[in-house]
Image (cartoon, rainbow, N blue to C red; front, top):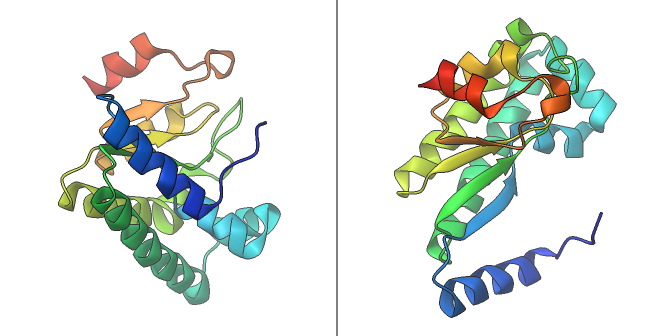
Length: 165
């Protein structure tokens, strides 16, 4: 995969795209799952979010506050929308049982999406993998779109449209 720009370069590129084109510009940012993986390692996030205790939920809340501030900053810098990159699934299903995600993940995703909407931007969610077991939860979180649907994991635009309306 190509090298990702550091934060300063990313903001510069966002502002450049915004001022030099008439395109709708999405800013890509981490979501709560990615924040957990950065804090605890990917395997650690899977373990901790499967059976979260108070410490895990507090960290997720703190991370979500920081992510919401990042979204506000991206909006102020000219983003037209936010793409939340949070790979929560693989080819067969979500990495974590959906019932556990409803306790440890979706409340925080919902807060992040609400904070994005509060600054007037759409929130589009990205994850590869089979999201059928959590699609209702993603929709309930208030996302405006889903990006990265993986046909090899059984996802289809037609199927998602039928379910989402």
